[in-house]
Length: 585
Image (cartoon, rainbow, N blue to C red; front, side, top):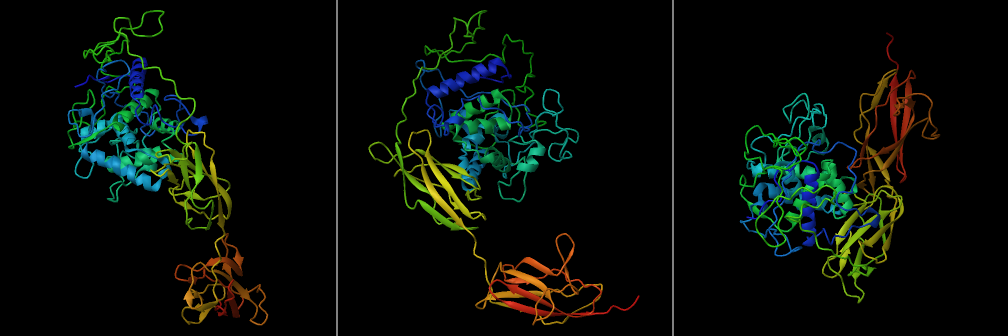
């Protein structure tokens, strides 16, 4: 088997150097989505490691993580492809992902593709985080429902080498009623799980110890804030939101690229455990070598059995060696006895190739009624300089303007790929409640093609009308002074004989049918502030076309009074209210 590029690394210069070497090798192999990735908006382009860490508490509380890196095989020559596994190749154990764990990652990707297509979450990213956080649920040590057989708990977050997070769950998830600990295969701290917990397997429970629930929750968190994970800056920001660490970012990205080159399914419980994590049982604590400066042995800075990081020799020798520490005054390159391979120098093209033009397909003006979906989604076609369609090109759709319209998933931007015919269709466009005009812009990501804009309009929802109002029941409505009517008043609104929902109804206490002026005495309602009013607006019929009026109260005036109900469609209904004098106390 190929030598491991890293064992249980500590956070520090050694980790950064090795992670950088792995990333360089992966980049040199032109791993998809890395060396040739389109970064979207150029103002957001950043190299790995330059994205700032978010200010909020990380999803795992900043607790420990496994820092093993993917294996590399000795290349035939400097700059040649790293040995990354092929599908179904059981001789590549690091590429094997336990069946339930793999299914959970793919299920989460499918769910978010439906609910948040603009996020473009790949399941391999969840696999990379799951590998670093828990070694794929300790090698897939889960039951038939995907719940870990034994708890997977991070270190106590008591401020001693980690964040200080006092207990937020009463020990319900982590068994600690004093401080929080990261929990489960995706290592959520309880306070974060309270906000982001999801039911990924449909059993009605949200359990951070269940890989299906945890994977969907992690994916939802990574997609938060309108992130598009096909954009490098958003990808880095999402990973750093999981753990505020440069080394964490580098480690996750290295596994992400590794898994994108091929994986295979292995039975639950047979996955490769991280270095130093040889048991899937026990207390459930993550490896005590935290990767955060603790570790099993003292880190002297001179290297040791657990600190040596084997790099492939550029001459094809399959033996591994430990880099010699740099001499004083040099540029930081390992000693001359065993020079580290350098990634090949490549010159990126100065002019983007492929897409040179975007053209609209179908209508360029779109309209919908408030609260409904647009019948058509914006669609463009990408063509090259010769006018031929370009397949697999990224097109970013953005909603611009003062509107509450959103794409499916309630996002304002989404990146999609063109099909074999060069067309890219935006996700379904949902009209909000706000009427007005806005713009949908389509941009070829990373290309010089001019953007295409679609004019969209949301028209106000028509006011439902009723031509008749009828009372349900005929019981006489009576009450005593200083009290209220015990029986509720319910009416039905119809239009051309059909019950009509959402019909606005106005209720007014009037002096008489002949002179329907607002009465200033007698029965009354209470408004939202609890003040007496004799006219109520904003009432609407329900889905069945019915409306039950709020409680009607009485003052000290006895007599017969009239309540008039009206609709915009012209319906009028007068209801008689009788108030008798209450007996003297």
